[in-house]
Image (tube, rainbow, N blue to C red; front, side, top):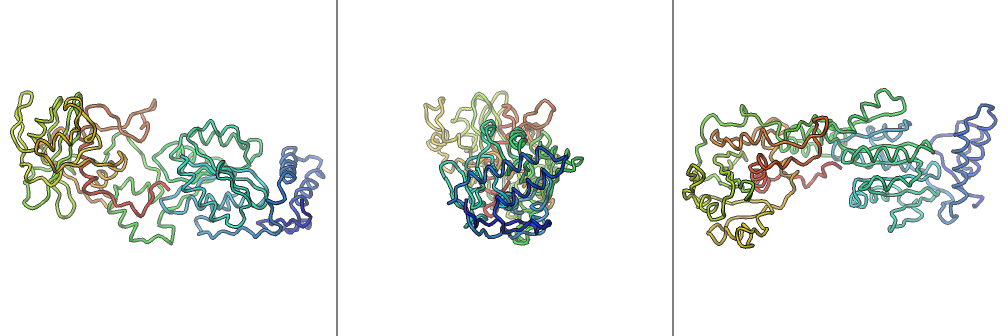
Length: 491
């Protein structure tokens, strides 16, 4: 090790021997000396100091900067409080774009630049680690990165500290690590097992662990924060999106108008929202079911949402969209074993004989702007000779049909925003004759765990209530999607 190796401390020296320009070895040896002069010294504290000294001796000389610059990231007040916290365990619970990941990175690097350490920055997936964590750490560490091994995801700083970038796809793969600290980003997207494994990885070092995340219901992160209320060595810090002065308030107001109230509070106000088992808890007959049958307006576009089935029912939803962006659902057809020829006839406006009744749509196909299905509309179907549903419909005279390529979650959020936006505006109404759709709004639920709480973020495919709900979200998200291009929800 070079004799002129300098070592910077974040805090001013409080002891005559604490010269901030000493070498790391001198700083640690002095620390050991002060420990052993006390007859009742802490053996663990002595072991920790010896481990640091050993790591310094193993650090390659070429990986060390002789005069490192002090690490002083720019922080807003709500970030600085979290970064400077000395609690062993801490959490930054923040809204989208509140600076969560930046704060976690600043806290981790403050620790890493203080003394040579081994820490882990962990994201839910490999992609999130690569696209979010690595660029943020690289930006803040800047010219103090001595070595970066992209193949293993390891970063070595100029004082010998090593940062391991890992994903939590398989928590058990983290069990072989010995860590001085860890940073778990977007923890609410992960099972508690990941947190438990990482805590165990710091048992021998007594190092800190911290979370940065946006809430996702009252899951294990909420329960952990509640447990910390009685723990003097654990702290939670909260920040709304509006706490970031770089965010335009007009963008937050736009999100408030577009998103449903619960989702807005969770994503922008860092609120742990109660999640019941009903997917659309804001739906109530009093708010959303019209008192009288909908009178179709001239010159307002009409759309049909369709969910193709066979053993399970096919579902078709007719709706009209007002110039103000309000949806009015006025007709429905839900039928099992509905051949594509009869489904096409129903769309065209012809009478269709079903089990015990005859159905005829209230408007003909000539007045329909677009028919929207899910991606299954492009898949081959056995009952149509291997032809896809949309291709078969085209040959039957239904040409204005498309397949929506979107996720279930984004579609659900689009429907929720129409049911009740964060500024309390209702933009979805149902004709009282659409009894199946009304019932399905109440019956569409999440699977439950042993405690009767929601188990997972995808709704239950029960073969009963999901078909009209699928047809509805295909249509609403395709025609009136949430404009989230300026936001990365959950980050």
